[in-house]
Length: 80
Image 1 (tube, helix red, strand yellow):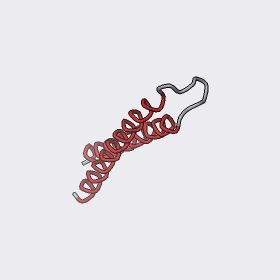
Image 2 (tube, helix red, strand yellow; image 1 turned 90 degrees about the horizontal axis):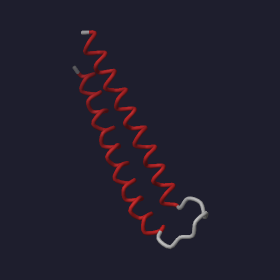
Image 3 (cartoon, helix red, strand yellow; image 1 turned 90 degrees about the vertical axis):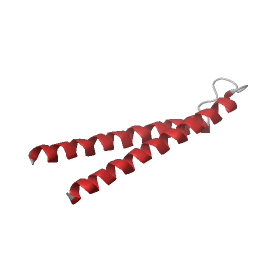
Image 4 (cartoon, helix red, strand yellow; image 1 turned 180 degrees about the vertical axis):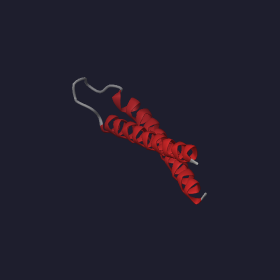
């Protein structure tokens, strides 16, 4: 029982990290939209675009970790 509680807490923590990454990415997107107005083409990615990319990768990473934990929970539940 305590193993399931720990895995449940891990899943909740990962879900929180997904939401935090998503919100930070959206904020970076909104800031980047303002920066890109009137910006010349070909200057490369802006700092906010790099942050958006970083936050998207973090969100995907946390989602994958949560899926792996859920798979472990299902495998443990099935073996009982």
